[in-house]
Image (tube, rainbow, N blue to C red; front, side):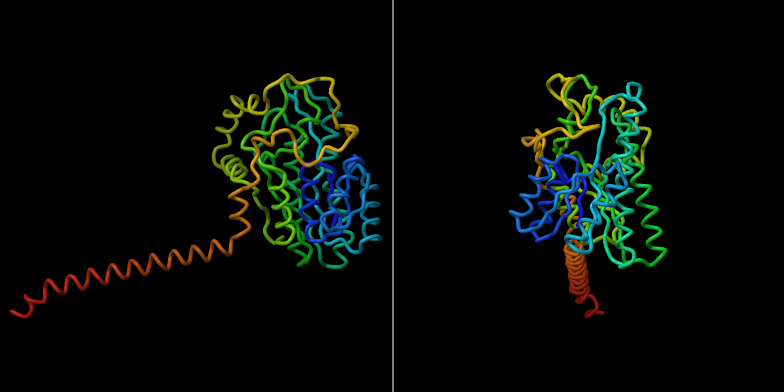
Length: 343
C-alpha cells in the first residue's frame, strides 16, 4: 500500500494501524525526518516500509514513487490519499500563490495519486483508493477557504471516479472517509495570520480514530463514504438541512472556535512551501482534550452486529406484544364465561 502525507498526523497514525497487520507500506511526504521515524515505527510493529521524499504537487514524482513501491513490494493493493496543506487566514488577506499551493497539494495531490494508482490497479482489475476527507468537504468554515475549497473538490472528484468505476463494472474501488476535528501537528506548522494560536474546532479526536476509520474503509470499500465521528455527521447533514443558518452561526462563532489561548508567533516556521524540520509525530498539542474513541465510528464499523441486535430487539418486542394481546384475550374470555353459561 501507499500513504501520502505519511510523516505526521493522520498519515503517521494510519501507517501504524496497517503495520500491525504486517502491511508493506510506501510512505510519501516531504519531511524526511518524519518519514524515517514513521518507517521505524512500521517496522517495530511488524510491517515493512520504504521512505519516498516526494511533494505530491509534482505529478511526475508521484508516478515515480508508485513505480518504486511496486518494484520493491509488488502490486499496490491500497492507496491512501491524505497529504494536505492549509493557510489560516481571512480570504481578503490571502495571496493567489497561497490558494494555488494549497489546491495543488490538497486537491491535485489526490488526483495525481489516484492517477498513479489507477494506472496499476485497472489492468489487474483490483485495488482500493481511499480519500481522506473532512466534514469541511460539505460545510465550509471561515479562515480556511483554500483548504475547504480543496476538500470540496476532492468530494466532487471522488464522486466522478466512483461513478465511472461502477459504469465500467470495475473491481477497483474508491471510498472517502469524512473526518472530524483531529489532534494533529498541523495547527503548529500551518501558515497562519490569526492573532491567536490555531486549534481544531471541538470536539477533538485523536488521529488514531482517523486511522481506524481509514483501515476499515480500505477493507470495506463498496460503501461510498464513512463518517469518523458524530460531529462530522452533524456538520454534514446540518448543512444539508439549514445551510443559511450554519452560515450565520459560523459568522458569529467560527473565528473564536478556531483559536485558543496565547498569541500566534507570525515568524514561526510553516510548511506551506517547505517541510518544517524534525519529527513531529502523529499528535498535536491537544492530547488532554482529544478522545481516542468514537461511538459513530464504532457503529459504522459494526453494522451487521447492530442490525442483528435491532432484529433481536424487534423480535422481542413483537413477542411481548403478542403475549400481551393473548393475555388480554384470555382475561376477556374469563370475564364473559359465566354470562355465556347462564345464557
